[in-house]
Length: 229
Ligand code: ADP
Ligand code: AMP
Image (cartoon, rainbow, N blue to C red):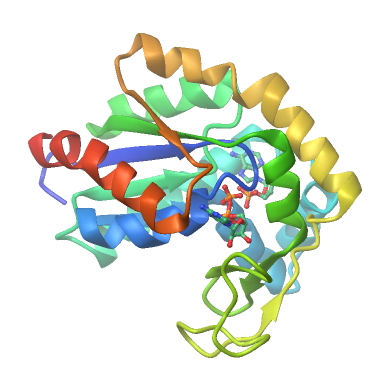
């Protein structure tokens, strides 16, 4: 990243919209590094630490982890990305912000760091489709890659195509936790989109299409913004 800091993109949308799937596909093609707060939490929970146990208390029931802890972890990760990928344009931020307070905290952090959000991609998918997607989702325990039993199956059942890791079903992809997470999304996260509409950053993408079509739509919309930034 340049001396004056990163140029980041935020990817938003309800659980199951395809944020993680698309971020993994588009980030490398735009010179961005995928940073997902949910992945950060899953990594911490995989180690048996006090912090991991604290996060799990929120995560497993589909509640939000406290804002301050989440913001701190995101900023630490952005710092690490800068060190590890000095040539990257910035991060593709997935899973943050989730409420108005987080959106305002992100604005403040960007100003302090002399960095910028250059676009916010919103992937829209109808609720009944989300439920189908979440009930069949599989995740790689090693690299976090996302699959679906029917819609995006791995080449070999239970094994990650990317790294050979083992696939598992997320502990929060249960019907109860999914209900809670979607309720939180529509109550607290969706209203944040207005903030980005007003800032002229919002890009709406129809996520109810095949994975490749969504990727092409995101790339077409983002390229001019990211490359001009
Ligand atoms: P999010 O990160 O927004 O919660 P994911 O990327 O994890 O969503 O996708 C949720 C599930 O839907 C995964 O099982 C994924 O394989 C599947 N999926 C993602 N995009 C599509 C699509 N365009 N069509 C069908 N299934 C999809
Ligand atoms: P995700 O992988 O984005 O679906 O996130 C999984 C879970 O991680 C959420 O249900 C929350 O418990 C937690 N989480 C992820 N991002 C945030 C955030 N920005 N704020 C609070 N909790 C979060």
